[in-house]
Length: 276
Ligand SMILES: Cc1cc2nc3c(=O)[nH]c(=O)nc-3n(C[C@H](O)[C@H](O)[C@H](O)COP(=O)(O)OP(=O)(O)OC[C@H]3O[C@@H](n4cnc5c(N)ncnc54)[C@H](O)[C@@H]3O)c2cc1C
Image (cartoon, rainbow, N blue to C red; front, side, top):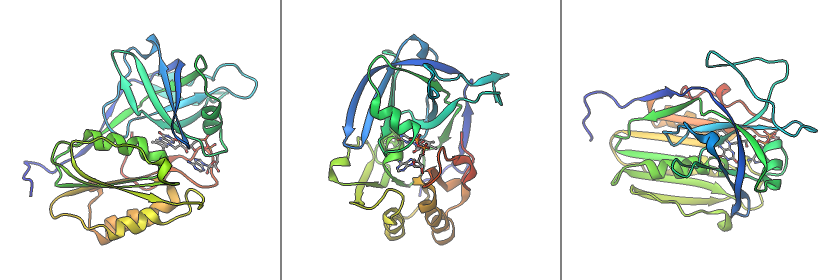
């Protein structure tokens, strides 16, 4: 067991709320179903990111508009406005401070303003980037980590693995359509990554992650579990981790990144530990 003076904690570090209009520098296919969009420019000056689940709101132009509507911010607070911006949440996959380049990995799932924009993304196109509002920082002093993700949460899972210290024990499950959708995941941790293929099943309809988490043999000691993906499929996972595995609220972060049949799902509405 790791001994610590105080129990490890999760805390939210707030960042000044800032909107940036950024230009696409590069677009590449990471996998058949995911596009990596690299934004660049001096507008990224002061951009902060600190934790694996850090995310921004991408702001899209309304039909017929050239540029996105800018969110109304007063006193560092996002205010209601007569015309609201069209936003979707996306993880900061990489930020290269020196080069002022920001990578966002966007899933091409077929319908939706985000997916549609990503499918058409080309260098020179402009997009609004709002945030990140904050970073969810977790003391990385646990004996083991259980990680789970579908492809929308793969950027955050990759960042989790990159953040874990050398020697940390980690078991990661990633659900993707098939072998072509797997990605190399770098880590210094003592990690096992298990890819789960859903084949022809629709995203968000399988219980692959749930079955994998239920069957997982976890080491003794203090653990932390992070799982993100389709909201409905995560509910039994959250219950299992809390009720059957006996993990406390501080040891579990299960976050519905999208919800089948719902556009722009609000992940704050799911029952999970407070989030940035
Ligand atoms: C904190 C956070 C971080 C996220 N990070 C990423 C990220 O890095 N990359 C990424 O691709 N996504 C990420 N997501 C998920 C992304 O915000 C949602 O998938 C979002 O709904 C996409 O917007 P859209 O405009 O394409 O679709 P929407 O207009 O929101 O939805 C249109 C329809 O598509 C469905 N749908 C939405 N997403 C999917 C999907 N993946 N597969 C199948 N159907 C879907 C909806 O249920 C709805 O019926 C993240 C979400 C959160 C909360």
